[in-house]
Amino acid sequence: MGQALRNLTNKNSIVRTFIHGGPIMWPLLFVAVAAVIVSLERTLFIFTENRRRNEKQVEEIFTLVERGDRNGAIRVAETSTDYVARVLGFALAHAELSIAQAISKASAQEIKRFTRGLPILDTIITAAPLLGLLGTVTGMMNTFSMMGGDELGAPAAITGGIAEGLIATAFGLLIAITCLFPNNYLNAKVETVQHEVDDAGRRL
Image 1: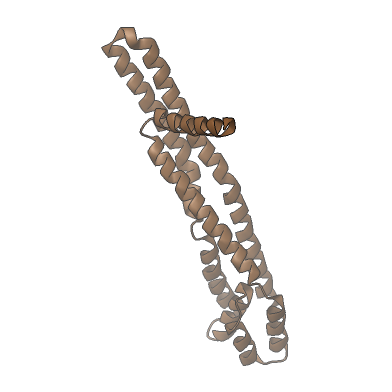
Image 2: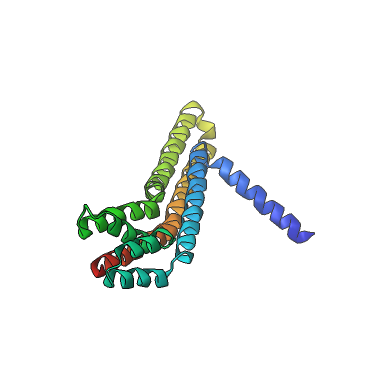
């Protein structure tokens, strides 16, 4: 019973802190939710693509190419869910392009799939602290406005305005710092994919 009451108190404290942070907390909440959605969706996408990797099929494509069976290699690539195999299949199927051009074009298409949504995370990392600072500015503006209207309420106004600004700034920084971890992880995975595709292209 005591633990439940403490949990309820904590929840109420979070709500009170959020409300006390001022109107800017709502845009910050929106970007926080967006960051969670993008991070989870991109992580799930990376996990799914890694599970679809089939290095045996990639090796089979290289073996068929070495034997001169270009059409056979294309058929294997077309049935594969491996992104490296798809790039190789595209390069082999577009004989009108040079291997380098075809690999570059197919690689760009795959990398575009892997980087989808990452600009949103980049924007959130930049925008969240700025929104927090905006909350600081508006909080201080409210403070000075209240001080001008009623000098007796000045101490309370100063405390409330500073608290509002600090809460918004802290929340914005927390969002940005938290987003750095999935953003760096996902960008590292994109670099890995790029290296794998480039290595396969050079081998082809």
